Image (cartoon, rainbow, N blue to C red):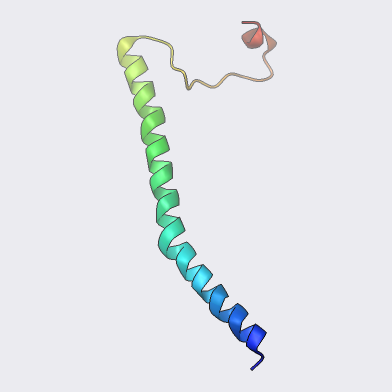
Length: 67
């Protein structure tokens, strides 16, 4: 077998395994932390009756950008 092809296939397999073992759980944890932060802030702002910092503004409504 060609040594370069062997090296590419071995390192490619290792890279795919590392992606599944390390990166997929990290992405899930990051999304869970972001979800908790955003909805925790929304809940806190609803409890204290203050406007939320994560409310979306309509980019087509020009009156919302006049501040």
